[in-house]
Amino acid sequence: MYKLSEIMERAEQLAPNQPQFHQAVEDVFHSVVPYINEQEKYQNHALLEQLLVPDRIIEFRVTWQDSEDNMQVNRGWRVQHNNALGAYKGGLRFHPSVDLDTFKFLAFEQTFKNALTGLPMGGGKGGSDFDPKGKSDADILRFCQAFMLKLSNYIGPKQDVPAGDIGVGSREIGYLFGAYKQISGVFNGVLTGKAPGSGGSLIRKEATGYGTVYFLEAMLAHQDKELKGLTCAVSGAGNVALYTVEKLLQKEAKVITVSDSDGTLLCQSGFTSEHLEAIKTNKQVERGRLKDLADSSKDFEFKADTKPWQFNCDVAIPSATQNELNEEDAKALHENKVVYVVEAANMPLTSAATAYMVENKVVVAPSKAVNAGGVAVSGLERTQNALMQSWSSDKVDKELKKIMQDIHQACIEFGEEEEGINYIKGANLAGFIKVADAMLFQGIS
Image (cartoon, rainbow, N blue to C red):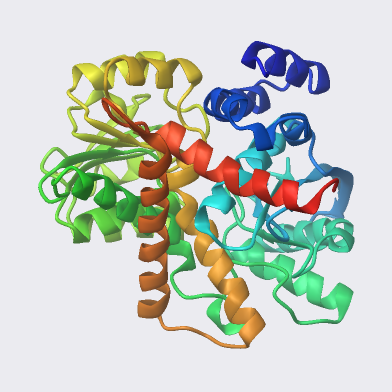
């Protein structure tokens, strides 16, 4: 019989000083341990112990020469956590704050998220402490070429298929793909998130945001409610946030916030499609700051050093980064009458925030279910590459919506309780069971 406390002690022994990884493990195993203790077939196979240790961790030095002829050194990682369901799949993140703990937690989460999609994908994650902000295109190109030179031996369309993440957008994916092609001499589906003209899928950049809204719609429909007219607070201003806002507006929801590291852009009357285009131009074209928009329209207020969780809303959608919403934020949201918290970023709630929300009967939809739309369309991109086809936007969008509805149904199946649907439990169990069954079928791997 497993005890969660003993499993967590083992996790801390195996991975000391990795609090994000421990948080991700505890979140999943809190749901899994009671279940696995009741299921004889999962006992005596050390499944949880196996899942505490990635299949492999690749760590490397990235040395590159900047445009002023100075040699620069960064660190790179790829954590290949589990491939029981298929080739490793997960993004690359370029950000100065990352370390091995970051990628272990993300790869662990990715394993179960990918399982929920129903597509044949294992879980992995990687990246570098390189900071693309403020760098020239030439410097980013040089870094991507140096990074891929070190990573290329460990990836491939049937081995490990990276994608983008924070700091790795279409520009970086293009440079990485070009470098891989030069190194290998082969044009194949080794990366996803490519431009459509280079084998990429349509609506890939929109997919995580659109999928978030499709999941939210399914939640509401299950309660005989609709999205139209609900007030939504969104954090972040990257692709996830902006395309979440775009789809929310299409569904006639009222969106009042987006944010960046300087603070929150507030529109009490609700953003319009014209407002959204201005925000996209600011963030995606000009690579500017949201505070610059406050002077451009009387509809906007910029709240410096303020999070979106201070304003009245029905739905909170954290879409920026991990642990961005803490217990104090959770209390503020509860006071502001929030009903649903929908995690569009990876693990955006601290453990204390999640516990507070659950205790106060706020519905929390976990990231491994909510933001699976991005990796789902990456999986569809792999399918298109393998078939040498390019699907229409409508076809990809239809497949995405069905996948998100299927994920929601799995959450209901495994998360139904007397008081309603426990989406955290449902997502954790649905993902775990798929991975665990594959591991048992394959024996020692």
